[in-house]
Image (tube, rainbow, N blue to C red; front, side, top):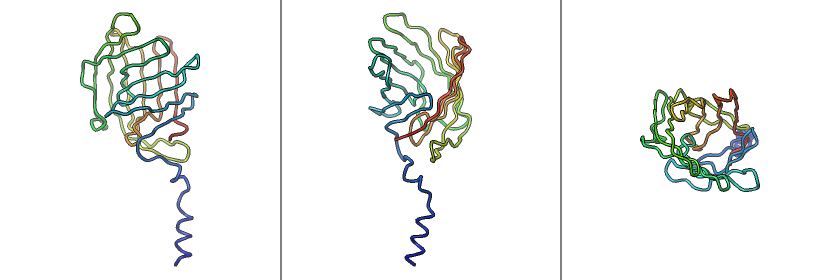
Length: 184
């Protein structure tokens, strides 16, 4: 009997020990950037990431989808939302949102800022040998009424981080993509 238990344990996938369960504290992405989560408050997340000049950028977001503020050295960008931001529990396939607010950079005037989109489906995203369920969220971002970014984001409800994002910067005609390579 003991021999059968040992065989059964050996047959279990080894990657289960490497997979994160619960909220992530650090994530590294395929484009070279990495985030270290320094605080969670409800669905708000504050994290650091390396920035040019050897300092860290500090960002606060809601669900990693809706920016609240970011500091890059002496530069500050602040988003003030006038619409209610969704909670993680709101985000289910078929959920639509249209969230309005303002964005202010440094000493400049605040300009209108808007995110609208939809939760499309749940999809498995592989990170190394681990698979995590992720909500696929399609978003459009508007600044002063002009569409500036379209994106498809893969948000893990379990880890509470973005696992992947595919972005198009409209004015530059530039596409970029990043995917989580490692999660802690």
